[in-house]
Image (cartoon, rainbow, N blue to C red; front, side):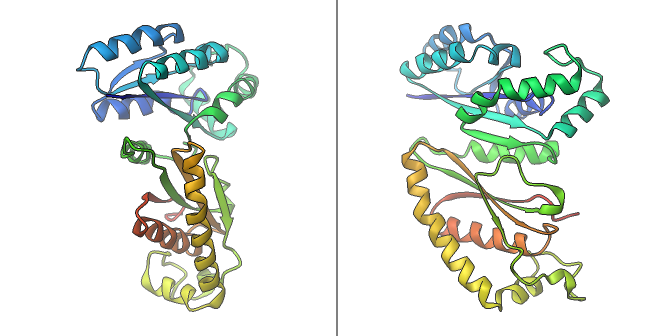
Length: 282
């Protein structure tokens, strides 16, 4: 029977250690900074020892430098019947600099922090592109990170795509982990309606106000239809995770309602969907 190995990697300071702790809470056997050359022997051990059911590995920049060796070892492990899922944790550069400043940890590359972050991002570019899932931790709490990772573990062993529908506010920046981004600022803004200003897109009065406008009806019908047509193509190309981001000005009204509606529609169609509203409390 195929076993899954989750490989947690990404930018230094983006939360790899916290992610591994989450996997530990889920009952995974976690190994941090395993040399890539040991992935083959580990694969053999996993096949022989039945109690190694769930494995999560942390990959450090010191190993990620050897990209060719890493990808070769991944291919070898998969030929032996193991299935790997690469999760790449990213964060905005100012956030990474702030985290290193607060913790006073030395960057693995051992340089000026700003210079090291810039070099590391360049070095990890290829690995990020090859990853199954990219998670932007810039604005995530540990609980929110754990919720996202928990959602990834719900994937069936059959070929399936896990969809995350995210709402956000443009004034707080684009989400780094989005695959599809759509701007819904063309819709009337409830923020300027006195009795709706302090409500959110999850409140019925806001939903009623937005949904009565024709542009909403035309958009939601055509956009959800287009997504449903694209999903089988993503699955065919081997994509396991897809993040759809819906943005408005503040991420509290329009984007929240649209994201909620899309998530419900895709869920009703039988897809595995999680819903997250990044800026709803701001």
